[in-house]
Length: 245
Image (cartoon, rainbow, N blue to C red; front, top):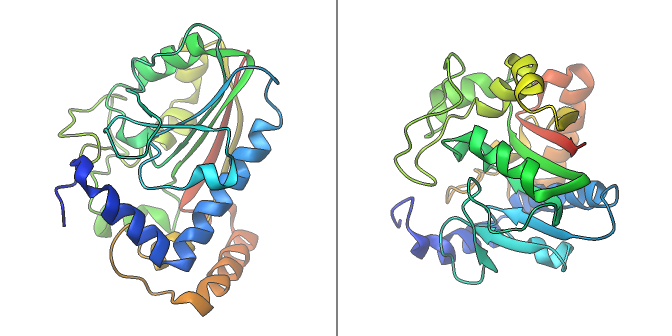
C-alpha cells in the first residue's frame, strides 16, 4: 500500500471503491444528499466538493467541481480548505465527505466558508459521528486519532490524511455548538442528522477487505434503517447542513 498521504494512492483508492458494491452504494447515498442540498442553494455560483479523493461525484453531479488538498490525478482543482482560491460570495455549495475531521485548523476553514459562500449558500458536511455504535469503533478499531475530550478544535497534523481527530464534527456542532454560534454568527446549523450505523464499516471503508459481497449490499442498507428506527444515535456518520446567512 502507498503511504497514506501520497497522491500516488489515487489508483488504489479508486480501485477499492469500484470493487465494493456496498461502498459504492454508500457514496451514491452521499451524492444524493449533496444533490438535495444543492437544490436548496442559490441558482448562481460555484458548486464545489472539497477532498474529492477517489470518489466519483461527477458521475452523479456533472457540474460539481472536484478538489483535493493533494494533487490527485483527475481532480479539477488543488484546494486547501483553509485558504480557498474562490472570490468572495462566489460559491453556492460546498460538499465534503470524510474531510472535516482531517482539517487541523477548522476555525480557518469556517472563516473561509463565510467569505466564499454566497448568502443562502450551503455546506453539506458528511463526517463521522461518535454515537453508541460509532464511538467504540472510532476509539478502538479505527486507525485515525479520535479525541472527543480535546479542549481545542485544532490539532497538530502529521499529513492531510494521517492527521485527524475523528470526533471533530461532533465537538464543533454538538458539544461546542454555543461556541460555533458565537464565533460564526453568519453561519447557521440547519441539520445534524446521524445515518449509516453499520454499512460503511461492514464494507471495510477504504481498506482492501469487505464483509459485504455484492448480493449483501442491500442487506446492510436494511440493517441501517432498522438500527436508526431503534435509535437515531446509532448512526456512525452524520449529515451536517450549514447555511450562510
